[in-house]
Amino acid sequence: MTITVGIDNHDTFDFKVYPNPTTGVVNVQITNQNSTITEFRVYDAYGKLIRVVDGVGANNYSPMQTAQIDLSGLANGVYFVKPVVDGNTIAARKVIKNQ
Image 1 (cartoon, helix red, strand yellow):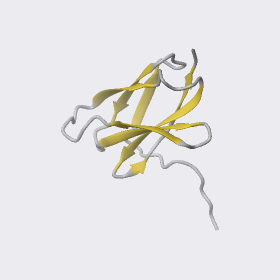
Image 2: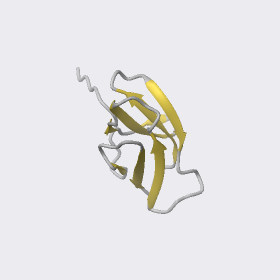
Image 3: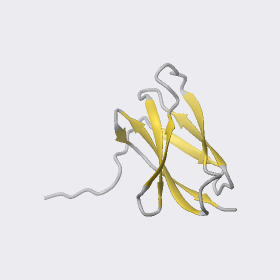
Image 4: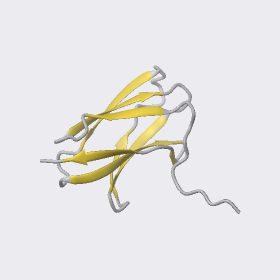
């Protein structure tokens, strides 16, 4: 029996979140040609869904895509940004929010 815990990793999916740590708005830079991101979900360190932000859209197929997520209204702490493709979160990046 094999038990796997974690987030699926897609070979063609890559994204970066910066600046990190942040005091407010973070840029999410996506390098991906095979998936359409419908939204980003922001979770707190306890796994609670905090915010849902529209993705880059179905009509934007450029290999380098950028979205912005405003975390300025959130308390200082650790958050996770997860892009959603076909209803599934496919990766996660940790973001530290301070000040």
